[in-house]
Length: 599
Image 1 (tube, one colour):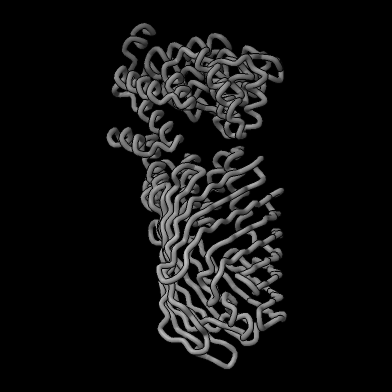
Image 2: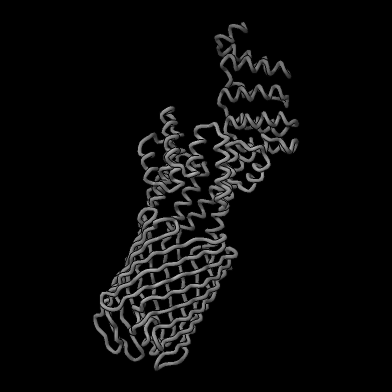
């Protein structure tokens, strides 16, 4: 009967086998479980207990794995790891966990193995790889450096060095990995990291030809191209293929890299709806939200990713960065300005801002300016009170009140439409000191404007502002009226070099005692920027401006900003350019120092 039931098991035969298994103990119970699996009834062993017997537990693990009952497989494997005692037990349990991608259990088992055998090479190496995959980078580096390093370990150590901005050390590790490697896919990935693109392309093409239905090769190639910013080639790789989650995720990454955050967000929302417990999807969506300027939502979605995978260091860093950005700043600035002969200013500004709710901040600014002009020497003051609101979709409202010799007010509202931000603003009687007469006669400006900013792909951006202005002086409410347009475009030639064109056109419609001049300035700029030892950011630019209705000349600007901690920064800014706003000729030189801190 037993032979018959094993060859052609029916309900009665399986029930009989289950009864025999439940009544047996130790090795006999394990043997009966093996017969049940052989009879094709592995899915029915869930009613059998292991009783803490290692033999029975191993037989049940094989049964649950065969039946693809991974929830019970996970539970039983966790129990086995908890009761293990020898290094070989922990090694076997870790390998069983890796077979089913139960990386948390594998990491736990390798940790137990290291507690028994601290120098175990496999445990060190595999624990390091698991720590890297889960974003525990410091832990991964410590483990991998202690292990006997294979090609994959060396690749990861190179990646960790690059993450720490140690470019030369990273290339050394990758070169060592390439020399020790025998895996074709790993070879292609290493060639990408070493910027050997022709060889990398040939290696990926050979892999794709050998396994035409293996979408993982396509995914790895596309991921490498995206990481290096080769978007056109990544688009070609991703242009066809199935709608697997991995390829769809990479297509969303490509859209975000091109600046199309709306499309990237839609694609990720679809993926998250299918797999809401995939933490990396939430993190990628958070990155897209941040790129789109929706910082509060980005922080929330990084938080969701963290709840699913708690120990990711990079997500911790992202959340900390966003939170620091959302903390209001206070500080002071001093500015020295000179325009042509006889015009000197020295201004001091104090500013403080406070968050009163997640959406609202309030602030105040006080500025004192000591002025020396040809026919005026004195001290003038102005102050501003502001309230700012921003919701989770990055809609923003700012309301301000001004006070100098007289009071004024202004407001601005902005919103995102796809990739673009539009701002509508108006101000009445705002203190305006950009020309000599305004300094000596309490100048103000009333203004209405519409601004539009738009990114173009990963490297380009454009902006345009249309405005109308009315200027006033003490006792002269209509000193002049103008309208104009400013705008420009920029393009990042490389990560450190940007080219920019700008235009500033203002037309005088009427003027009274204020000698306003129309202008049409075209400016061409080259800019470079970078970091020095991570905490110092430098920027420099130079260009040439030509006013079609007036003067022309070169200009330069630069800055050095030191950020010793996330809550403190100090900087020096220098700017020398053609004086286009003021009603006197000459170049304007401005030097500013600032110190800013967060609560």
